Length: 582
Image 1 (cartoon, rainbow, N blue to C red):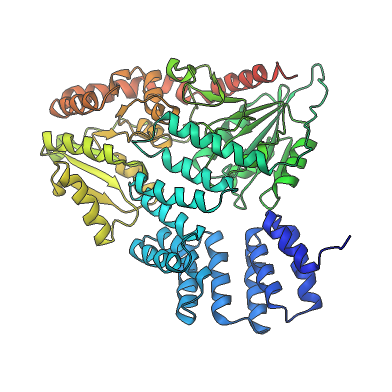
Image 2: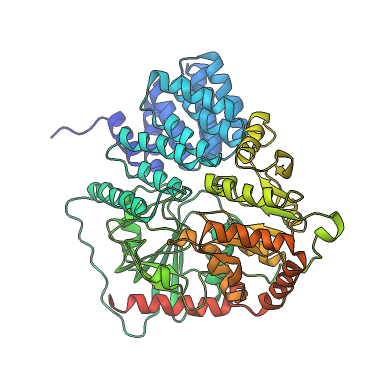
């Protein structure tokens, strides 16, 4: 049997996503044949994807010394800085690459993503058109346009591009993940559409598993603590990390041992806090699915909790092979995964969600709420209503604008038309782009609002974000994809919100944040009720002031801010889920 050549082996490792191993293989090749330009490019990319960014930069610099064309060097540096999330530097390098060589399709493809990240949307579209004119099935360009339209609050147009990516790569589950994430934002995609795409993801992920891949659970050990794995790339200063790390710190380690599988190359103080309370912390971002499955199985877990779902850094395809007797979805992705090997999804105690019509997993209720927020370092405010000093009502949605669906625009425009003195604050990445700003104002105007009623804010620092809450009299929760972290922030700022409740988890986040506070009256079951009751509140600011006072009274004693209580409930829920399997 012929052994693969070193180059073929390095290519194979890269194709599997085994980036650290691929880097080692490419480095051996360049040490033997320093003028092998493919090997230098392969080494640079492998190091970048392995999170070893300075080494990647050095590799591309060395490649240039050995004759790699300047456009290819700039393109490689562009990829490296994209992965490092330094998108402005990435744009500089990618623009240089396409200037030096307008036929460098890889550089054009990455320029789509980098331009979008820095708010240069027209340039992103232009770059995608260049790529697609030559290669209509290019995943980078198709996905870039999908992300761009989603972030612009046009989810159905985004879904068209992501569907093209799905069709262009019939064996790749990743593209289905991207489509599912987009469909959560769509006001036309119901639970059946999400379940259908989830089943397609499951089919593709299962097809990638080795033919003989039997999972063997460990034998039960009486009195031993439950071994729980946490799979996430976001146990850092990220919404998921801000919720989960304080919970991990409060779990009873005599009952639950935590094994963290970190799928990101980015770590910070939150990561260090999680490390300190974990039995083991595994950095797995550079592992392919085979190695990741082996690592998790070696830890003999009782329960695996996936905190990513179909979001960035997802490793759901690995979970199709089962790594624990009980596999659970929670928090990071508020929807169904579609994966048959994900046994349970944790939800708030909500009868609609517990009926399970929206999910492939078996829903299991947490005792009080979906998650709790550590507010020990947060000032719970009761600011005076801004309308008393500025003479008009200020509404606001500080969520990512991708959640502002066309149905949201229509409903909020009705509210603004009925209360012509009201203003609406929106956070829009790239709002300084005049074409983007005009487009958003035109959408609202077409639905009856005056363009002057919109106050578009550029993406802001965290301090500016907190200060913006003090400008709002009432927040508007987007739909169908409700706010999560933003809903908690509104409570801490003393600002209530109106929400529209739907049939799925992502559509009931708002309602389940209001219920523990006794503010169920702000959760509505129809768009008409959402609009009419919000208008009524806007016309009776004194009633709204009363709701704000109630929020300030009830929040400090609510289970929403009692992390020790929540940790005990989660701990017991995980133990109960493991019992049938142990």
